[in-house]
Length: 86
Image (cartoon, helix red, strand yellow):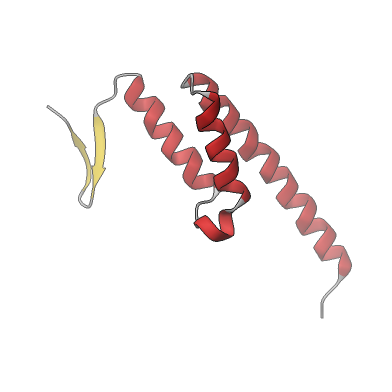
């Protein structure tokens, strides 16, 4: 049976996660000193997630990887796990 209370709780739960994701994405964009156009593209991508198939966790992972590279880490991932670039 479907209850409206569970919908309200789930919606509040998702809003909480959405706020967390948004804050994390904003923080990473600031650390990367990204241009405004890049931020607009990310917003557009997330607003059209059903069409693009790209979701906040994927954006966060990509931005985190970019920041790590910018900070000088030379680790990368392939099908066999992590490797170091010589």
